[in-house]
Length: 302
Image 1 (cartoon, rainbow, N blue to C red):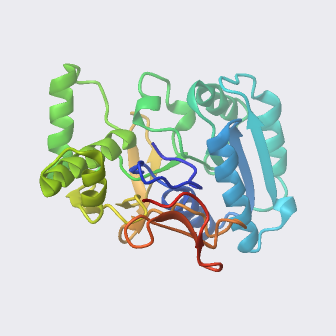
Image 2: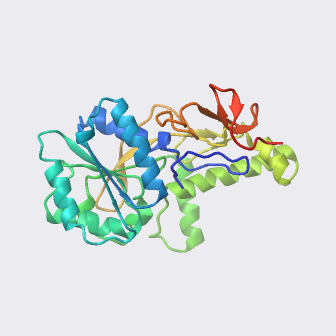
């Protein structure tokens, strides 16, 4: 899955997006393409939204956004009463500046959130929402009318058209014996990771974890968006970033994508205590090497 970054382990390979492969490009898109000036950072109250929003708040301020133009809100898992919060968002967006919601709201809470936006006539044209945890699986089986036109940022969409993705979708539906089942971004991340592991095992001629860990860095495999992903020395991979607009059939229309692949970054460039850290398990053999003190802050690989 996508995650909040701010960690690095020799024994973990991060095939989901780091914040610089999802959250930061999404904000850049809203800022440049939609001229957004005011920001609602809305999330479920746990580590991923809090850390991601901490990074985004620092990033927005580095871009010159004033504190009064940033609204941050957290709600419990499964939160269902969105009337007051959506009213607050609506009021925040009425200040004469283009406003957007950057959503790390997770799970079932998304359905009543979008429904309440519709109830209060907050459209995607008025205040667009870009979500990091709403994909094809979350949209399947629900009424997507209130969500149409809103956005999501991922590294893969089922609607991407190429031979590799078409073949993958066909195999998945045959395997699951249900033509209505969808694919999504975490499935692609696992597909990439498993194929990287296979290549590393072939390269190491062993399934011994230590040998595979050393062999997998530099391994490249096709992804399902038409490119090739590579395992980096920081144990993150290269991924494209796509912004998709939600359609009434529960699929996404890609409206923007990066020109090339974005290397995953374990440590945010925008947080104090993180921006000086480098993760490199091949040369430095350290997950949190401080580039200023020239020291490894944690347990280096033996």
